[in-house]
Length: 406
Image 1 (cartoon, rainbow, N blue to C red):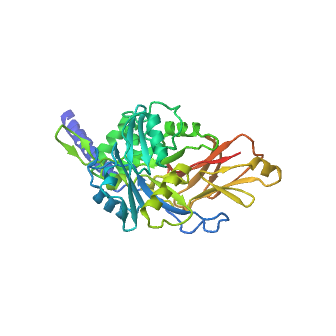
Image 2 (spheres, helix red, strand yellow):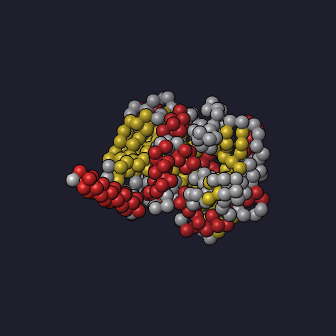
Image 3 (cartoon, helix red, strand yellow):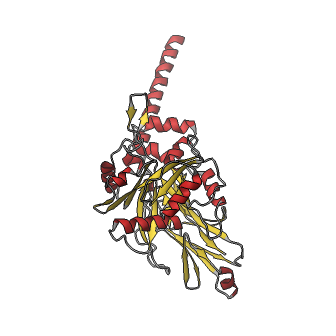
């Protein structure tokens, strides 16, 4: 009797385990999170409308330690509806010297360079001549002489971290770096990524959307008067995992990493189609901070805006609102506006306003309007983050750059 009960119990347990595994498999297989956008919700804004382009910055190819050919990756980016594509192979600018830069249909491709310094890796964006690895100050000087943008790569990547957080002169920081995102995950999540990738890459990659708290704290702490540091998103894709000395696998695929996070550049008008001029426009926008970045895995953002107004003057990310304190004393208060075309019935969202790294105001399921009164003579730096909810799950989906008000 006891043996029969044991056998029955074992069979029931096996059936239960099989059903549980099937349930987990089906949940992973059909897992999808997409933001529902309402087109045209924020069209009637008082501020001048900036033209937005989205792009993929920082990835590696066969010119260094990546597995992809640039020609193939350009086609991949075109299918993903990117507007520009910027490679950054290690210590080489060969893609440029070999004539690969240019327009491919509607997509602009140009090469940057990820350069080794004694403190870590520095991204040189918009340069024309190759820079050899070396001392930080010398490399920075060379980037500046070429009117390029210098961006600190993956500052808290445990494999290749940035080692001197007191250096000066650089233009920006990779706030989201997908290589750092997975290296910084809880080991249990890393196991979940590996086990689920073959079933549903989206499920595996959505774990990369966690908030890089340490990097953001560093970013907020280095904003200086008229010398703000730009935040960007970097794919840092290699698709080239080494298993043994002779065996490598293309994991994750470029097409999947290119979809996770992007930098969105804000321009006064459309790109002209001229390689040199448009390359400079994108580089200058990064240097100035005229951009935002988001986890586009959940949908390419629509209708996002963020600006400050003082009377009839408008200030966008990267701007310094000079003399704002005196204008305020004359009765014209500084007002900050932000919004996005998300359908709150499908995806509740919160726009959070930060001042000098501290959250000071939030707006739920609608546009943010915040009046700064009185305005201090001490420079303050304001930026927004947008949290989006999928049921109980929250994703910090979008990050703006700063506006300085003083």
